[in-house]
Image (cartoon, rainbow, N blue to C red; front, side, top):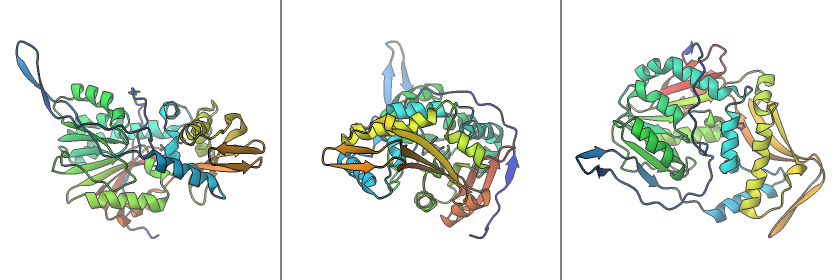
Length: 371
Ligand code: AVI
């Protein structure tokens, strides 16, 4: 690929973020808890017996419907491949989501802190560029803390939080609404991997699609391009994207971030087998599997696998798979971009004029581009 535009790279002083976490569920397109049927709620008026006050409540809409047969079929198909794989979306059961939250606090796992430091330093510049008063559409909402930090500078006209299930947004959005009574809020249960069909409750006006945390890195570049193209298709003139992207760096730093000394990432990876056992009724024994994280420098991606420690046969109701000692199940790729390459990806998707902000070490970048 040839460079179309070199994004502005503005080194910024990092400052440690405050921990704001209260959620049990990790954000992202990957979160795959059950998504229950929900009736949308509307703005309500609450009386206190003396005077009447208009209280703005978040609205909730569940679009995505979980299809447990399809999930089961997807897992069994992956286990049946010559190179067995389990999609990373199956990491995020309740325990997996908690383990991911713990990962973000690890000394080795720099992305969350580094991204927060960039947001802290660059918030005014980001707001100047993206413009305040937009409809802020948070594609990886989770506990909404990253978006909430931008409220003071962006002053959004509406905050739309996406998660696979609105159930994970209810508590967080309710308290966020109390703290920000002037911002209308909508919780949307949607799957980022499908077409982005925004309901009419999403206000008209300038939209800023916000996808923090480098979750884009968990897509293969071709799928990342497809996702950006879907966003571009949903964006009108004046709209934009704001995306956190983990950058290419030395292998030692990267491998340590995905194979920490405490073993939290190992637990996160092995926990996927518990979730698979629950969904398909298989009998994976966790003690038979070890966590492995390697960096493929050429493809610029961390690859996570589960490696069989001995010969094992895994059984489920209608089948089984034999693994020899040393065989691996692929569980996740985490792509690390060079800034120019990510700018090219944005432009290939149809966005224009990409700019980025980074930290002094150049480890992480936040990109903005126009629709
Ligand atoms: C969610 N995603 C951006 C994380 C990452 O860094 O790729 C998932 C993760 N896997 C292991 N550690 C963190």
